[in-house]
Length: 350
Image (tube, one colour):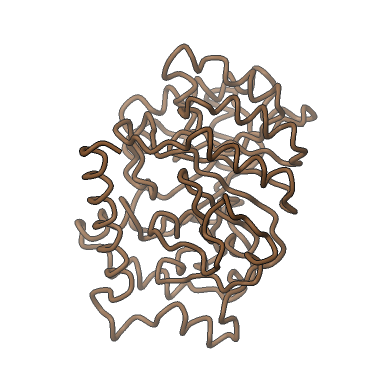
């Protein structure tokens, strides 16, 4: 590791520790109940894993976009990339795990130089549902990515794509100038090879995140609005819309504090707490693997460097039985996954 990258890493760790302290102590410690206390009231503490269904692997933080709400703090300047050695360790686990879904994320996972090799090798391992989380614009970012729709189709990849809104203004405000037009073009290209088209079996889902300090609306209603607008304006079709609550961590937490919305947002999450959502939060059926191969209860804990509470901390020492016998690490950000209809990487949970 170079001196420059070591300094960047130390800065990241310092910022992570600062964010954990803010979440743990807040600016209104006596007013806001801890998440642990809240789930104790409904006899749901400690939170424990259920049957493992999803392995979510972060291939790196490098991304061609810099989105305002990004909980990974991804961008073009991020150099953290999963190595082929760590990918080999992941593949060994993929071949033996009881999980049926592999969920590849980033950054832009496609920017990992070994992305295609990893997809091809993982596809041979018998995973039933193969997800790639794409920001869409990567498909139009450079000619070496232009054939991604065909590549996804070849391996029957389930494409989950970021799409903040069906209008240019709201999308570009959250994700950057020109993102909307590139996203529309990418969606049309995915449709052209069969994605989101009835009876093709090629799944194309969109992800909506609120653009400010508020909770998402009803997922089903928004899906109808998205489908009508994108169909009417651009002849685009897709399967489902996932409405995901922005969690108060990383870039979004910095925004909440800078805009003086942190206290109101946290109170909104607490007031919308839903004990039914706790039963189905993604940390109960998902294991998150960082670009370095470390194990976390979810990708939000990964961003806070809160590794699993188990003797097994790294993919190289993976033991599913030991990992299932653990308590899930929680903090105040967990209110984001249990507010209203709940939130996970697959959208609402109730």
